[in-house]
Image 1 (tube, helix red, strand yellow):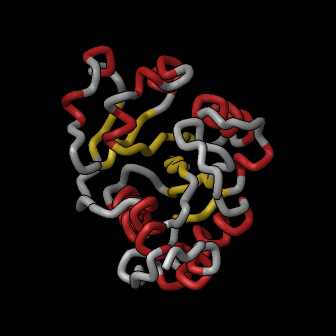
Image 2: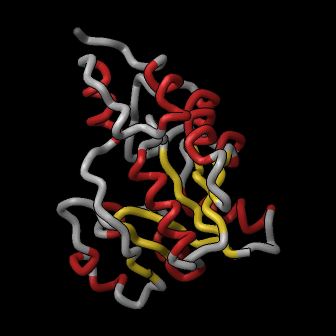
Length: 194
């Protein structure tokens, strides 16, 4: 089975995340998508991150009725902070029967050479790059031109998890952004500022 690893803090998971995961399946780029809920993203040192179980529950609720997409707690038992190369190595070791590919945004692709063990990743795993506002895959460093990277053709979702948290904290309605099964759980984590 070909599995796309789509990592993030998912604080909160939003409709854009779900659309990307669906797009990966529908395009045939992977048989399954694992939403890899990370305890500690090295690029995002968030001080007020809801606990792992809550973010996992939000992600699981959002995709519970979507075939081929599931929330994963695989990184919860790995050393902190998690680096993608380490996660991919651990996945390959635990599940040698599967092929893993990495799903990342164009914002991460253009700075991919700053990732730990980026050469190992491009030498050993396919990469699916989804669109992000203001970032073009073509502007990535030339050393990535030979990488097995595929651009996912999917709509651009213009609201980030950070913006959704800000709106929710101000008392704004975020139901158009957060999947309905996850909304109440997300709102229970929001510190209101009004």
